[in-house]
Length: 174
Figure 1 (tube, rainbow, N blue to C red):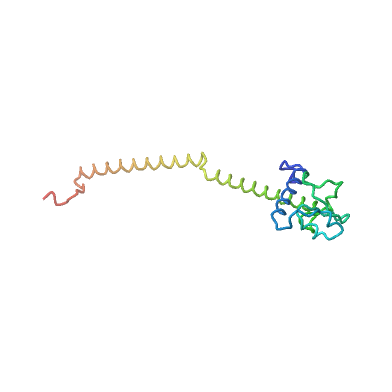
Figure 2: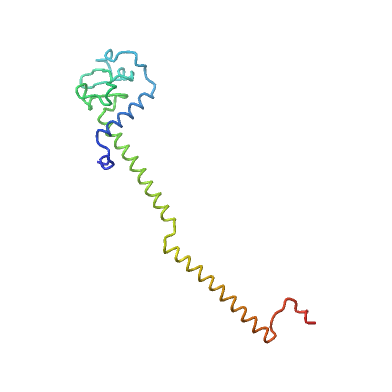
């Protein structure tokens, strides 16, 4: 029950699946709906479903007008397991289950991707311990530079005292 975990009730899932099927079949090239559906009763499913506004009921081989005011055909008209619309090889029950599973899988996939992206962004930020380590390393580097400068000045004083100081131009004395 992945759809229930996502907060979708079975009725909403069925409505979403039927709406998607409606959009897909309207987009496909089919006959205009000018002809009445009852003319195709006791013929074949393929002939009936050439008209977009028709619904084929396998139970009694009837071609019926699709109840456009209701998203799903009522059970009094035709059972979902024997109702066909758009294509003859898929009944409404299988279509609703398939669409809800695919929709749930897509939502789950998007959720997982979003969670993974958020975790990566969090891990890219340096945390407090990393910031502290970087700050301490910088402080040590600054102290080391200060000690080096201090040692160099001491060594230069000693060199001057004993005449070992290296001048810029050694021939300046002469």
